[in-house]
Amino acid sequence: MRRHPPTGQVSFWSQQQETTTPKCIFQPSSTIEVSSALLLAELFSCPFAVKSDGHAAFVGLSSIQNGLNIDLSPLNSLNLSKDLIVVSVGAGNRWVDVYPYLLQYNISVVGGRVLDIGVGGLTTGGISFFSQIYGWACDNVVNYGVVLASGHVVNVNPNSYTDLYWALRGGGNNFGIVTRVALSKHSQGSLWSGSLIYTPDKTDLLIEAFYNYGINAVTDPKSALIFSWGYAEGTFNFTGISALENTMT
Ligand SMILES: Cc1cc2nc3c(=O)[nH]c(=O)nc-3n(C[C@H](O)[C@H](O)[C@H](O)COP(=O)(O)OP(=O)(O)OC[C@H]3O[C@@H](n4cnc5c(N)ncnc54)[C@H](O)[C@@H]3O)c2cc1C
Image (cartoon, rainbow, N blue to C red; front, top):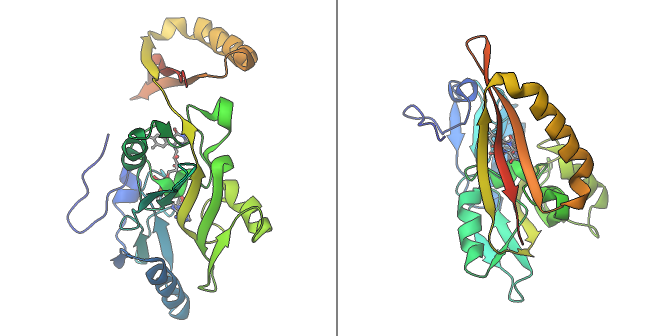
């Protein structure tokens, strides 16, 4: 669920991130502005953090105390190639904006399972309901537009900066600021989805079922699930298969 930020803050998923107070929040409207901010931060030795949609849980991942928070949310362009094969997505987008845009063409991309996760965080790692078939989100990035620590703006793909392409796919924010990603599409039909919640006494049976699902998953690549425990005030109060999916593409 989306949390509402205090006045003067940008929104984050976790309270820990949200209660940090940066000296400055900068919302760049172009790649060049990202590059300028990075160079200025270096010049003045200003600590900074990069935020796409702020779903990382820990302080310092995309928020910063007394530093510069670069909030990429204005980088929210969406462009589908003429042949409908590749979609170029600004790193400040959220999946809730990407999927409806693609739905009109009956296509989709490998992205977040929760709609208001950011494109920037998830495409430098991240799994999807479609990952059994198509791999991780980063496996479906055909090009990253990246601002390097030098301020240079480069395209990173299997033919250009290949070592960086390898490292970015799972490397998070360690290697540059991604301003846009080009994602390969897949066709998309209906998707079935549901949730099942059990009392804690069923935990052993559920773990066994989860194990069996795992070892047999290869026979049903269109299926996906998230298995979780509810823990509050010192007690495990439920076991849930919180998202049981059949992607039915
Ligand atoms: C409710 C919830 C559901 C989730 N569901 C899934 C899921 O289905 N699949 C999954 O794999 N993960 C999931 N996660 C984990 C989530 O994908 C990661 O935390 C992801 O990194 C969040 O991306 P973000 O852009 O929203 O977060 P942010 O906090 O903005 O960024 C996360 C990290 O990536 C860095 N980063 C962000 N944008 C850029 C950029 N453009 N360039 C360089 N670095 C950048 C940030 O600096 C930060 O370190 C979930 C998390 C939550 C809280």
